[in-house]
Every structure is written in structure tokens, then in C-alpha cells.
Length: 255
Ligand code: PGA
Image (cartoon, rainbow, N blue to C red; front, side, top):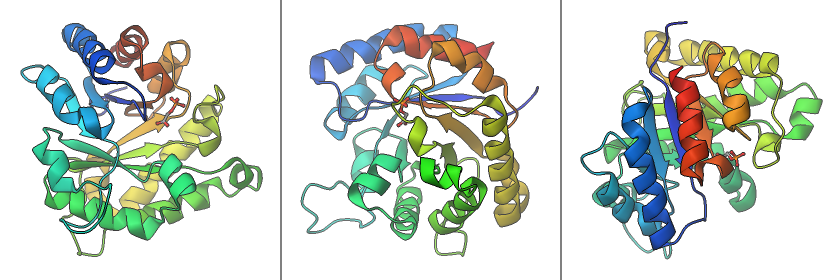
């Protein structure tokens, strides 16, 4: 099925030191010309500039895993969107469930971060997804709508949301790092719902916005997941820490 060019994004989370990270990035850069999808590496912030240098001159994109919503100031331990950009990244993951659930990030906080990312010229990858209890209660689609409503600045307080500045990642919380995934039908339903809700919010601009699936994607299941309509790529955690498995997933996205 014709669709958007797929994006395979690696979320390294809090893994990798300088030497390992550079070797992983180099192996991925070396394999990048054999795949037909976009590749993005999101290392921890300590490595962003190093990985950006490693990837420079290659098609591999680099992103960070979070940024603060303020431009600068007394926010010990945080980094701004402009700092992410300055380090050589062009993407930033926002609202990952490990930040929503582990650090209490709300939709409205994520929304301010999306605005900050856009102001700095970054593409925001906005993560949404239901918990297991919400799925069991039949609330999945309502949760996704509410997260999109709350997390996307659609009311004129930032740049207009479009496919050039925003990516959505659907990541069921219970599928992250667990080896469990929704059925292909459940993924198809969630992604179709997200696309329809984006259309409701944004009109025609919705058709260019990539919607990634994330949560225990690996070489064994990537082909099936990436064939589903409205699955425009993957956000990969564990399987992005090996060049072989990351590139195998990218190969499945290309097929
Ligand atoms: P996982 O993580 O692939 O290890 O499940 C995905 C994510 O958290 O982005």
C-alpha cells in the first residue's frame, strides 16, 4: 500500500556510554544505504552531539529523548529545545510513557514542550498510549483521543501541526519492554483511530503526519506491524540497541 515514507526510530533510553554508542551509531550509519526508510537515533542527551557528529554526512537523523518547555533558566538537570538543536539533533521524543508515568508528565506539559520544540525547529515525536487497565476497561480509543487533544498545540499557541514538524508514536504502555504486543487488528484499529482524530483536529494536514507503532517491536514482528495501514514506522526501544536488529527492522520497513 502506498503511504508515507516510513521512519524507524531508535529510543536508546538510559543506555550506552560514549564508546558503545559511537560504535552502534557507526554500524547503523554503515548499513543505512541498504534501507529505503528514514532512520533516526535518539541517544541519551550526553551523547547527542557525539552521535550527531558520527551521523553527519549520512542520511541517519538524530534526536533527543526529551526537552524542557522553557527557553532557558533555573531548571537544574534539564535541557532546552534550543540546546537539543544546538547539539545537532533535529528530532525530540516528547511525552514518552516512562516520563508520563514515572515523572508525572501531563498532556498539558507535553503540549508546552511540543510548542518549544517547534520554536527551536525540532520535529516533535509525541507519544501516546493506553495502560493495560485502560485497555481492559475498553477505554483505549478515548484515551488516545484525549491525549491527542491535550498534547498537541492546535489552538494557535504554536506553529501549525503538520507532517514536517510532528510525528505521533502510538505506544501501548503495557507493550513497552514487555515482549507483548497488541494483535495486528488492535494496532490497525488504534492507528486508524489516531489518523481519524488527527483529521478531526487538523483537517488535510493530518494525512502527512507519520504515526509510529512502539512497544516490543523487533525483527520477528516488524514486517507484520509495518504492513498495517497507517503504521508509518516504529519507535524501537530494546531492539534499537543492536545494529543488527535495528537494521533488520528497517529492512522490514523497506520491503
Ligand atoms: P521497547 O520500547 O521497544 O523496548 O518496547 C519502546 C519505547 O519505549 O519506545
